[in-house]
View 1 (cartoon, one colour):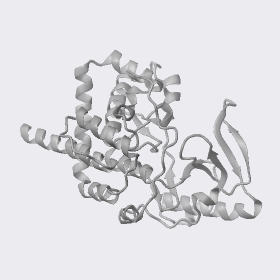
View 2: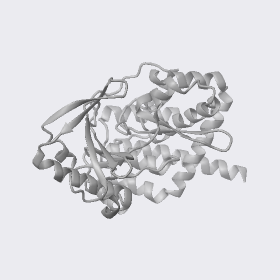
View 3: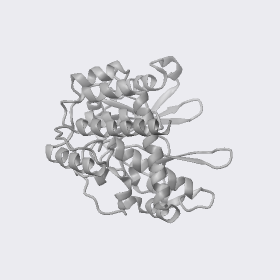
Length: 351
């Protein structure tokens, strides 16, 4: 059941050090960027940005000195070209930076860039964020272990992320969840699976505004995919329940839906299915995962008291023999190895 959970108000930021940079370069994620996160912080004024209902969006539009604007915007267009077309700027000559928004809420304080096609007014977004090894780990795990792929780049100074399209979770629950043209059983099933994905890869703080619903029309019924859009709380909190979306009060409508439609056996079946899918992805990307965790083996990624608490709670919950851990990546390695080993054991028994 949803309950009141305490999320760390101010998360520590962990630098991107050389071993992790080498990993990012090896797997095509590290690039030289024409401008950095700190460059975008040189705005000299802001305008409050309101949503279409005239409510404060918690974003402000950044205004830059005239002598800097063109250089910054040219750099942003180059970054977008790298993100979308491998750096081929010729196909993006007709694009224009319409707005640079700055988020004053939360830990990461990202910049959101709105870029518009001058020919047809079609627009896109991308994000510039300050470097944080924990967040980049979350992006990598999302790309490797989830059903979705995500495009991003990083160096020691800046993270660039594509926009993840979808209906924000809180908006979906308020406006779409109970409508008759949406298959509630498919929605409930996806929430069970999403809940499992977050726990197994230790992605925390998945309250309703930190994930989106991606809806794909199918030949009979629509398919639903829940995708996280905030990776700040990757492997950071000490309580196991903070990695389970079901325990956040903001997600109560989804929890209620699952409880109304499924019994324990069905829920267990979907959890098992998702762990099996994760295990196959672990197997398929075994070397990359090994390199990823090795590159962060000396980074705690959380205070020691949180590491100690989570190590015990995860060991108890998954019935893993307890061993001391001094970093979050040690706990993550132990958990992923357990999921993989149990899948291999089950597969042998069924042959």
